[in-house]
Image 1 (cartoon, rainbow over the protein chains, first blue to last red):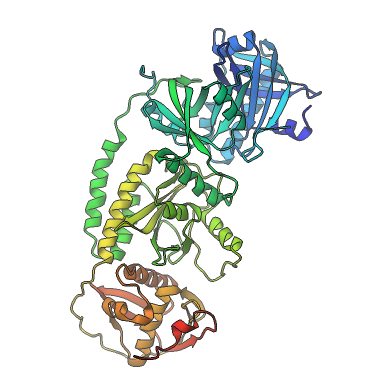
Image 2: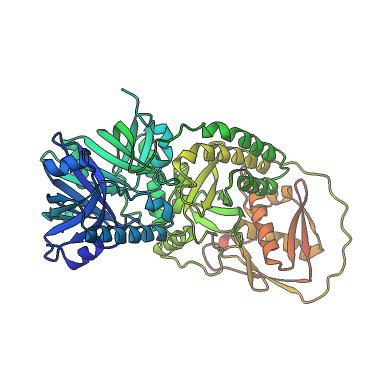
Length: 152
Length: 463
């Protein structure tokens, strides 16, 4: 479903934004960490801060509609994956390792364009971290330009 | 309308486009959408403007379901805020649109992407909720920064008022921007009387100074600020290229080759933010004040008001001093001594009025014509003392009546000569009076042109 170049992009030090919505179609947001595309390219696993009782947690559990955006700090490129959450649960040690690696590479990428590390590190919120697996139903190229929104 | 728990005024640094923001929407079918955008701009205490460039899906979603959420980040502290929005309407003209559009055009021009980035509109949203996001604590109410600016503005105006001439005001103005406001890198450019280009007359913080460098109107931050008569603030230039690259590019695209001898506009290698402030007097564009910083966020839209005030004060002072037609009485003539040593070879090219001393490029255009006049008269009768008035009356120099920019031209000439240490100097000795210094005998060569400028150099037919 996803070509290798897009997978490599998703696995780099990009900023990850996770969007869900409630029953009134009100959108909700959390930053995503440690994204990993499955070997068959059909699902995506990542961690988000979604504590018990939060809007994000309720949305994931009630309807599971998810969009995940990926963009480097330069925002020169952007990709979005849409699907439905098939798993919401406690992160395993392997998930947390991926989160840690991702935070480090995201901070390093942001530093390359002048954003201080202590600033980018504040983007990460570790409380109430859950692991989310979603089906990859659609993929869009959102790179700024006339082709933004093109299906990949 | 109930008050927001975090007032928008208190998070204005987040609403200036320094760091990208996540924007999420949802279609009528319940499919969410996450996109990243560069500018969320403060409109008033309950509204923000989002740029509408390419957000095709976002646009469709907002038409179906006007609910949106945007996450904004304070570029100084990393504090994050979540704003629940309701889309109201899109504006494709008017004050907010023009302001955002001028900024985007300037950045696009700087990046050489003028054809790609076109602002289609700004989406105006009402902010229903503004709360801290992530691990951000509620912000402390702050004192008004505008009130804190009054004492330094007072001092800025006091120092400018003490300036005795144009060159003095240009130098003091830029140094004072550094002293009082921390704007350590600045360039003052004056509009050419033809109105299609600007030339640098003074700079602060750069080596070399870049005095004499030219920027076409409409190109890069400086050129777009001039063209639109608007302050252009770019709080995050990390994604763009140096000003000079944009200028060189534009010259290349126009089919010409950038000339090797011309002076480059200076620029910080690690520039992170920049602003260009148009200078106006008598309702006309007189120049641009260009500022650069190695820090992100130094020139955010929140600084626009301050920059407009500083620009207005500087341009008013310069306009008054440029218009000064006064003249001191003649000084005692300096005793002339016979010059010794190797002669200085001075060449003047009619084609573009460029002057070279011992093969080193000095200056071109009007300052070149002025230099050539001074040197020829000196060669003829040893004169070293000249007045602004006789330059204004010399038709060969072609200075326009009225606003002739003579002081700015002389400043460029003086600074170029001083920087080159080529054995020729021009000094301002008194009000309206100049002194030419020459360290060795001169050999003057005028290189005629066969090009379109030929007629301008023919002696007049008389009458």
